Image (cartoon, rainbow, N blue to C red):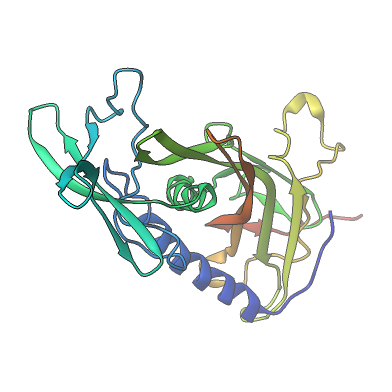
Length: 282
């Protein structure tokens, strides 16, 4: 564990960035049978599908069947597919047949496998849970100069996946993106004055270890932070902290391609009451 001292401004900026990023992340979490336009540097494409691709019966996980739309071209004397070029992107027109018999025409792009993976990554980031942790001592009974263990709840510390795909005349082309939690971070106010600017931080690989009575009070954890000051002078008598998790993002595809994408961080607030025990010496 490495303790760093940073300005309170840094903590405030981190909190603001976390709030703004989470709102954006939840907006992008929408998952529907037909993809829609979105943000993230223009890497999400209209027409990309987010249900699972068709199975052996030709029906996707939402119950839709996809058929290329065709037209008779008198110039070549044959039936051909319907396409259009938007900028540098080629689109194909498909019939999307619903389980109730209805049919909708959908323009489907021809993105690369990497572009499909980027679409799936947007969905993955929207599905990542807010980090929640347990501590020992508990957050309302933390003690100055006593190491506080921290560990992630097992109900959310696991990989999250999403898939993006497009129909093609050769079958479905898909990419599956997976986000895996790899690192836990903690940053907190740690100043004995009412408006001081000192903060402390720690980070560790993995979710940390759960403390138990059998472990004892002298044991240490790689995910442990030791407060240097009491929170008594703060508003409400608590320090504000941020718990963050770094997610490693990778992808695979049915074309045999695979790779990695930039990591992503999710964060949540935590309030801690830190007491300073007074010893009586005779």
